Length: 325
Image (cartoon, rainbow, N blue to C red; front, side, top):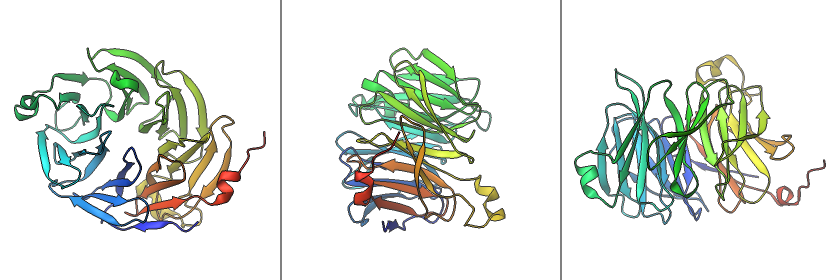
């Protein structure tokens, strides 16, 4: 399994994301560049230039017309996917940590950090009403007083958003009223990443407490736990197998104290039902910050602290693999 190596960033990768068809892969890092690649051969399609700080998050809408990015330069930007033109710019008071389109691609949400005396907010803009962006007036803004949001995704059917917090809590906020529908705390430390399954019925969280957990996306009921001995930075669910891939490694600042052999920078594959690890893939020279499955389940990508993105196409053995219970 020889990976395709994508070298388009000078700093560590913060998030990678496929579009719905899976022909494009969007990558953002702690440099101001937003890259988009062809996932089939790793050729770079282009860049979205305009940010002036680290870019924390990226999302593409349902038909890959628009791209949304949130950055530490205190802005959230909307781009035309095909031409790379900047369509809209929303200024914020602090860094934008998470962003996302709802299922229809008409409503965007993003959350801002709690920093420099400003609170953590989740803002909702309706793109069908241009005045909201022009006047920087979201149709709804939810304050988060207790602990800041570190990752958030749209729930099923765009009815709510699921947000993971610094303290390990999971919340479900209604996208219509803004009220908290469900709150649970299964993780003991920060939730680094949330990714939904293909059919949006469940989602997996990756946490600093060395576990990834599977939840029901409507009730937030906790279903499975995948344990490792290192912080988990990202986890993704396979669209057509009962597999989860976990990416992690120790804290970036401790990396120099261990050799790469024992650095545990592998991507780890777990069985969804049995919570058993059945495979590892080495490669990165540093913790893996983001993993994503291709929507057809035949390949996956990982982006690391080393600034590289690797696209791995699975061997035939992977598809023939039967888990023996």
